[in-house]
Amino acid sequence: MRVFRILTVLALALTLSLSGVQADDLKSGPDGKIGGAFQVKAITGEKKGDTLCYVCKYSAEERPAVVLIFTQKADEDLAKLVKAVDEVQKNNAKLGTVVVGVSGVAAADFEKLQGTHKLTTPLVVAEDKDGPSKYNLNKDAAVTVLVYKKGGAITKSFAFKDTKSAAEKAKDISTAAQDALK
Image 1 (spheres, rainbow, N blue to C red):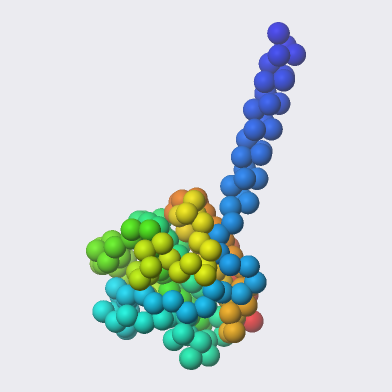
Image 2 (image 1 turned 60 degrees about the vertical axis):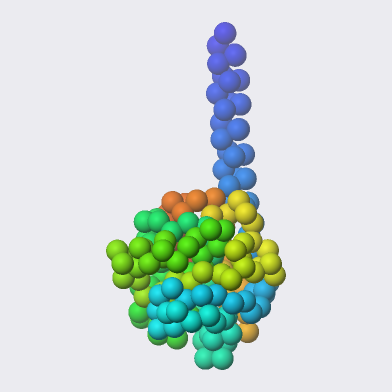
């Protein structure tokens, strides 16, 4: 009986450790370089109401680094993540930041979030409901974050199954944004 309990505990520990590895292995987004231009409808920010390409805008402005956040959900945890990125942007005006709603995130979702939190980062909705195909967004990733340098080279990418997990890694994402500016 004692051996059975030990084996059960070991099996449970192995299962939990493997499930942790799988969560960390969630892949979303392109490898090496961003997927290029795509159109969005700006819900907040200086371009509110316009249809434009933020990747193009930031490239034309020669921003040294950009934080591009794709999200399938607009909630309090997403706001925590965006606030962390906003803090970096406040001290580094040349950092480009944008949150792109995909997979059903609607203008009203972002308007509500903006009304509550007064975020600096523009909140936009992708014209292609599932996001730009060249970006290889994983449907299992509620949040995909791409940090890239001028020219589109990705310096760090993150993928999360839910917005809570993304909020918990907000510090890592803001550190990656600061590192990309160097």
